[in-house]
Length: 189
Image (cartoon, rainbow, N blue to C red; front, side, top):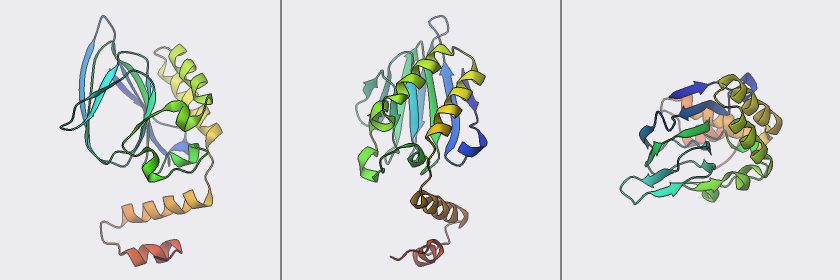
């Protein structure tokens, strides 16, 4: 079963949704999902069967632990079978950075599976335990995720500028010149 919940209003500019996929030994799932390039990242809490992830056309790798599936520049295929229990956070493009203390450089995590503690520090392990303990209670899980991300939310002036530039690009319908974007952001080429 696939379910979604929405983040608290102050998080909505950064987090698209929280998502949950659950099967069981009695009701196993056989999932195949193709994910195309979308410049977004997913925080994945895996409490069930391992899953495989591969760039399309390449050999898959198995993942059993929770991780950050950082922004993708190549399409991928995810396959998972059996007692699936995965919970995730889908970040908007450029939405991850307000929750991470260190600056994010595009080459650091792009197209990588990164351990959750490398991204969020040891505090993420308490959230992982609380999510597991919440069972199937979608409301409780949403509250746990909201509380964690609201506590971590720190938007720097550089991130505010990036989000304004992103919004400008997204609203331009492809008719935006680079120098106009630079003028809009008060920056130079």
